[in-house]
Picture 1 (cartoon, rainbow, N blue to C red):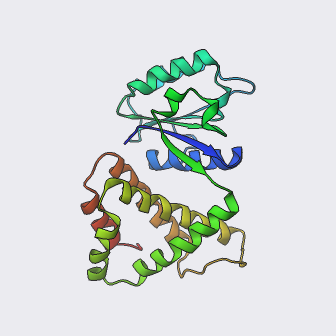
Picture 2: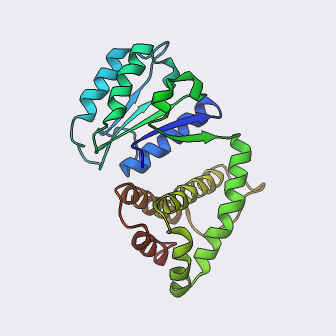
Length: 234
């Protein structure tokens, strides 16, 4: 599992929103006022001095989270010297650091940077949200109504590999975040109905976020998914 993530596609607001979600997954908490989260941006360019500051930050131990997370937003603004400097960090990243980059297209960065990152490409937001809802709602409902024994049988479907378990947790978080967004906006059009209060949904999201952190720390995916699904929904 690569320690760095590169988010492409969609528009800049959507890329940053996804990047912050990934950051929260690594941190296990909100990014706002979090001493282990650092946002790097540039009005016109991102210079080498800013990347050198990253090197200093990732060399430190996390203050309260499991990881130090660096988000380089609109990474295409990095100068060539800045990109080369970042490449040195990506080649040997500290185990307790995670670096997230956003850019419209891979061609905006050095190929060697992209090769050292897990690529997440975002499609059109409206189509993506509807696809997530249509695919994840039946999964959520099946887990909601399943008995403990049935949930054990479902574990294997989502835990054969670490990547499979990660995908399950990430997709369920995106699904539940969309449900929350629609609840806040009181959107009833095309809105799936689930019989959970907002605080219950938030609790499930937090459990999923903790599971993501453990999975990225190489916890056994089957054991983790057994514990998650047996108590799911919480």
